[in-house]
Amino acid sequence: MGVSDSEILRSYPCDDFVTSPALRAWRGVGVEAPAEAVWPWVAQVRIAPYSYDWIDNLGRRSPRELVDLPEPRVGERFTTAGGRELGRIVSVEPGTQLTGTIMGAFMSYVLVPRDHDTTRLLLKVVMHTSRWAALGLSVGDLIMARRQLLNLKLLAERNQHRAAGAG
Image 1: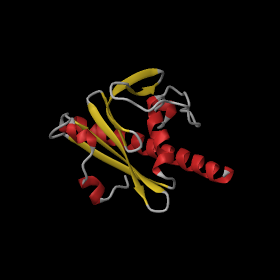
Image 2: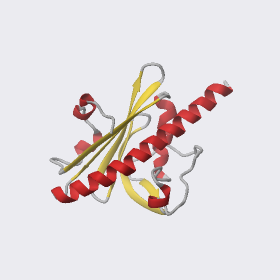
Image 3: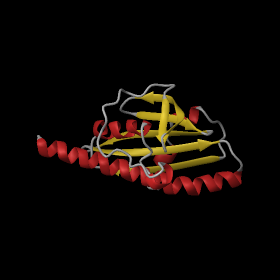
Image 4: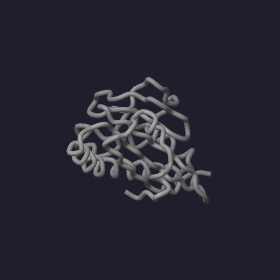
């Protein structure tokens, strides 16, 4: 979803954890907000999945307002879905990238600042698995990851618009 050749070819932190992955999937979205406005939403995936809440969060709505969370740290939970803590953070550079692992998959959210206070929010997922499992996971990931990135985009842009209106 929406990634350029150069975004596919770049190095992602998840690449350091899986050599020769059977599954490699990239997703990306442009966000009309600076990286510092997008980062808190990416960091907030620790408390909710932000994709299709009725599927992966047992109908619980992911927060639509920022929660005052400390910066993520390696070893902490990666996300929460359906009230269950899932995965672990394996690498983090606050404001730049968050990488975690869930059930053998490693995923990196990377923020790339652009001109005019815009940001590219990129996601790469890598995993060792069979080719058939990789195909199934890739299709499921396409749907869920797309919704997650679009929700994060919407929330960051809405929050940025509110902040600009208040200033």
